[in-house]
Length: 286
Image 1 (tube, helix red, strand yellow):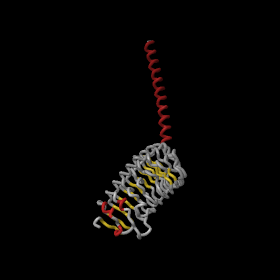
Image 2 (cartoon, helix red, strand yellow; image 1 turned 45 degrees about the vertical axis):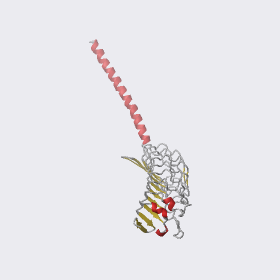
Image 3 (cartoon, rainbow, N blue to C red; image 1 turned 180 degrees about the vertical axis):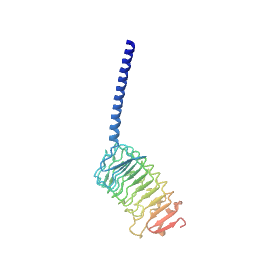
Image 4 (cartoon, rainbow, N blue to C red; image 1 turned 45 degrees about the horizontal axis):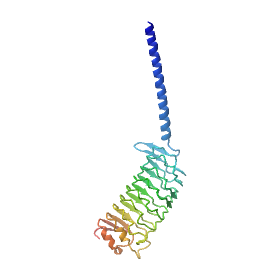
C-alpha cells in the first residue's frame, strides 16, 4: 500500500515539475518573439506599412524632414515628396533587405559616399528632383545589384570619375534635366549592361570636347540614347560622331540638329533603327 502511495506522489511531483518547466519555456519564448517582431515590424509614425510578398513602407507626402526609422525587414520604401535634406550614413544602416527606394522630390543637395553603403540588394533608386549638386566618389559603389538609377532634374554639373564603375547590372540611367557640361572618357566606366541612357536637357554642346572620344566606349549594350535639348540652335552643329561610333548596338537616338550635318561616325551604327531630330523621325532606310 505504501508503495502505491509513494508511486502516486512521485507521479504528481513529476507532473508539477513538467508543467512548470513547460510554462517557463513558453513564457521565455513568448517574450522573445513578441519583443523582436514588435521592434522589427513597427511602422514609422505618419507612414503606412503593408506586408505581403514584400514589406512596403509608404511615407510619401508626409512632410518628413529626415528618414524615418524604417523596419529592418523593409524591402520597398517610398519617401518621395517630403522635405528630407540629408541622408546620413546611419539612415539605411539596418535596412539591408531594401530593394526599392524612392527619394524623389526632396531637398538632399549632397549624396555622401556612405549614404547607401549597406544597400547591397537595391534594384531601384530614384533621386530625381532632389536639388542634388554634389555626389561624392563612392556613393554608388555598394549598389552592385542596381538596375534602375534616376538622377533627373537635379543640379549636377559634373560627376566624379568612375562614379558608376561597380553598377555592372544597371540597365537604365536617367541624367536628364541637369547642368552637365561634359562627358569624359571615364564617366560611364563599368556600365556594361546599360541599355537606356537619357542625357537630354543639359548643357552638352555637340563637339568633341564636350563628348570625349571614348565617352561611350564601355556602353557595349546601349540601345537607346537621348541627347536632345542640349544644342541651343541648329547652326554650327558638329556631331560627336567619333564618340557615338563606339555604340555598336545602338538602335534609337534622339538628337538635335538635322540629318545633313551627320558625320561619318554614324556609318558605324549599323543596328540603328530610329533617328529622331526634334519632331522629325527617320528610319534606318535613310
